[in-house]
Structure formats: C-alpha cells, structure tokens
Length: 330
Image: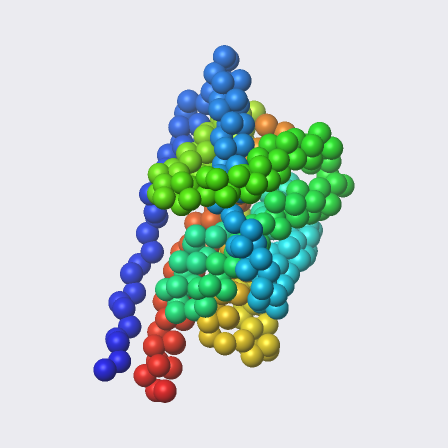
C-alpha cells in the first residue's frame, strides 16, 4: 500500500530566527558603548576563530575526497553559488542608489559571494526524497571552496567601491583560514569528540552569530543605521531577495531538466545551489568590512536567510508529493 503524502506544515519562524530578531532589537535599544565595545569585539573575534576551527576539525580528509566525487553535480552547485549568484548581483547594480540603498546593495553583493548552507540544504533534500549523500557532499564542497572563494569574489566585486581593504584580506587569513586549516589537521585527534558532542557544539555556531550580530548592529545603530535605512528600503530589500531566490531556483530547475537529472539529483542541485549560509556570512562580514558598515551589510543576508527557509519548506513538500506520486504509479 502506498504511503500517503504527509500533510503540509505551514513554515514558522524557528527559534534561531527569533533569537536573531531579539538580538537586533537589543542592539537597537542597548548597543555596546564605552568600555564594553572592545570587550564585545574581543569576544566576537574569539568566537569567529573558534567557529572556523570547529568547522575544520569536523571535516575529515575522506569527506573532502567524497565531496569531489560526483564532480558534475558539484560543478553545477559551485557554478550556481559562485557564478550565477554574483552575475545576478552585478546585474542589480543600476538599482543601487535608486531603488536600493547603496549600503544594502553592498550587502546583496556580499550575499551573492557566500557558500551554501549545509544543515538546511541536507534537511530539505531529505524531505523532498532527494539524493541526500549528494547534497551532503555538494554542500560540504561549497563551504570548503567558500573559505577561499568568498573573500576573493567579495574583493573582486567590491574593489571599485573600496568596501574592503588588503588588511581585511590578511585578517581573514589569520581569523578564518588558519583556524580552519588547523582544525582539519587535528581532525584525527578531536574529530570523534566533536561528533559525539555535536548538539552541544552546535550552540557555538548560533552563539557566535548572535554575538557578532549584536556587535555589528550596535555599532551601526550608533552610526545612524535606522536613520539611513527606512521601512521602504526594507520592503524593497525583501522583494529583491525574493526575486533573487526565485530567479536562481527557476534557473537551476531549468538546468536540471535540460541535463535530464534524476529527481534526487535535481533536488540536491536546487536546494544546495540556491542557499546562502548565515553561519558563514556573518563572521566573514565582521572580518572583511569596517565595523560601522557590517550591520547594514548583513541585513540582506538575514532577510534572505528567512525567505529561503520559507520558500524551501514549500518546495521540499512539493517535490515530496511528486516523488510519492511517481512511486504510486510505478
């Protein structure tokens, strides 16, 4: 007897998103001032180093080799993440200063340079009855390459705007690349311990992002963020993020049909190729950009993050129903 499709659950704001909103409100009402500013900065920098060290320590050499195995699918995901997104971001340039606030447009360009998510890409591929092993490898490969490609692309796309400096590039080497590489080197010694304590260590990811969001928005609020970014700017930003995600998803769906990908590979491509990582993006922005601008720059990423969760929840259920229908008729 065929299994009936599960009833669709209306997507809701998850706890982490609610905590992000709460952190932005706290930073707006009580930003760090005086002696607390360097203290928050130090805690934030330590959080970034620890975050990427744990990411590296959690990634085995075998996982890297496996992530490079299904090279055709991975090339499609990497092309979507690091070519398609940046092209669309550059195409939005005429809107900067007209429909989109220039600082928010810088944030959109930065968003377009970020790697895919890992956990949610895998989760949605699983719900859609897709190729979960391929999604694991594709998302891992995206993040692995993103450690180097994101700063390079960001520097390339924003060089004309002088948004980042050479010092920022060296800072990301010391704060992100070196801890990540050191973590990979120590995987054989501490990888097992990290795997056993993954639920607890997952709090490091979220706590690090919350600390950096508080620091970034606090500084931005003091510098007049909410005076320069209006409700109309936010409304336009939401619409642009929806259009950006929709265009990428439609393109990837069309490519997968043209390439005659299986249902499983199509879902892995769509979900891994259309997502952007908040966990990676916030700490990278904190290192790459001047402190006073980080709040506005991560705002598009925070909005895109929630939109992608809602849209992917709908889409994953749609793929699931299609897969179950195919199983019933076969």
